[in-house]
Amino acid sequence: MRQTPRSSPLKQFWKKWCKQKVAFVAGIFILLLVIVALFGTWIAPYDPYEPNYSNVLSGPTSEHIAGTDEYGRDIFSRLIVGAKISLGVGIISIVAGGVIGTILGLISGYFGGKLDRLIMRLSDIMFAFPDILLAIAIIAILGPGLTNVVIALSIFSIPSFARLVRGAALETKQAEYVEAAQSIGASSARIIWKHILPSSIGELLVYCSMRMGNAILAAATLSFLGLGASPETPDWGAMLSMGRDYISSASHVVLFPGLILFLTVLAFNLVGDGLRDVFDPKSS
Image (cartoon, rainbow, N blue to C red; front, side):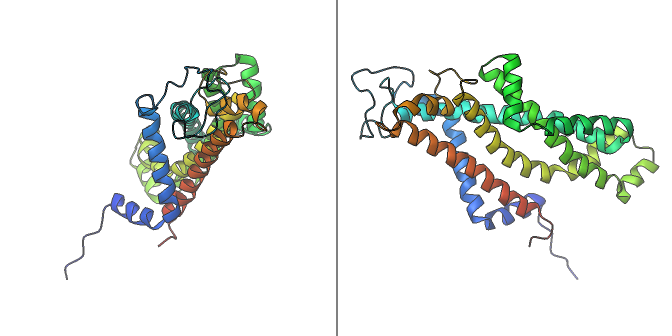
């Protein structure tokens, strides 16, 4: 009897992903946001840094669809260029923290012993502090600026990734195929790379998506507090900080940056929920 060829894992993923309607729409929004971030300098209708003192705090019009700020700069253009900053900070910090945390988690879960206890105790110490307070403490030491914001966000992401990967490593290293690889003399590095790490890829993708929203929100919070981007930079958090003085007389100055920040964080969380359902082995 002829067997039906089994579809590739990528096709299976795409089939399940298309069933996640809300997450699918959120993914399209993030894709558009990434395109805007990459080509924002050419897409923006106005120079986001150039003031126009004859058109200060103007409401939304056909020429300035999101209005202008206290210096007459086009808010829509600043939001477009700011997407590169906000997404860049989030992506770089999550990738850096994720790589370091994954390495520590793999080492901790696979080898165990004193090394495992040391890594986990250090993680527990970092977990004792709320993320934003830990980031503020790190920036207080390093000084304000976007580079130090990335470093701070990367550092407080490490223990979460380490604990996540450690749990997957502890579970996978008991599997029969891992024991079989050990019995034939496979090196620890090969076992970790070929067997332990692939088993946690799904969980890592889900967590990265959800953590991206938190990282973008944390970066905006730090900029709002004056610890991140400089005030003239078209960063979403800095725009909220600069516009709070005009919230009663020109609410559009904070409305649009707050809205795009809300939608971006929501989209990443929805994509994370969708990925979790896709990678769930119980899902049909």
